[in-house]
Image (cartoon, rainbow, N blue to C red; front, side):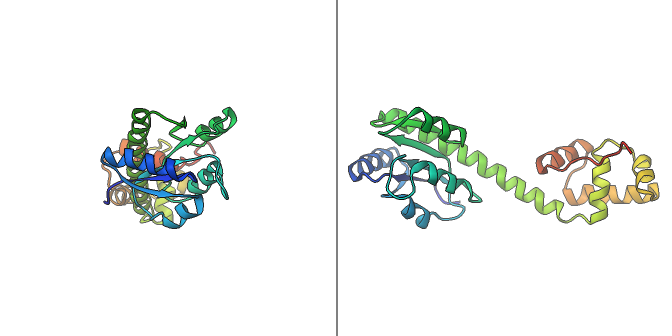
Length: 208
């Protein structure tokens, strides 16, 4: 995987330059942009990093860009840094997942600490998304009948109960169960349940 990149989006050139120098001195790769359009054009899918974002800019403002970034498959964490910070802006930014909302001029140590948190968050979220993709790929190996059986298993039913509900032989349920465990790469009901929770799979309604 490529090294994380800290993206700085600010229409004030001296501010961009000063921040880039500070962040590079701390050992990070840095790219700078004068506006949202430049960032959106330059972002590379799957590349780790974070974004330092001004709120007030020509074109898309910081909050609008935050919403745009959130639509991507691998959204990068955002640190807002602004000289025009208002309480409603900061509340909206944090509610929509911003790592921090700092007012210019931010102390170097405070900014670098926020970057460290943002990069750690990006790594954790990237790992979680990768695991979910892998689990989804495993789930898609299941046949429609196996998915149906899975719903009954995670509802806590015994083989014979699932067989009765689905009107099939208990031996057939056991065969489906074995294939489900194999395809989802787990060897216990606890593991199966955790996978179902991570994928948002609901138990079958067995109350009928």
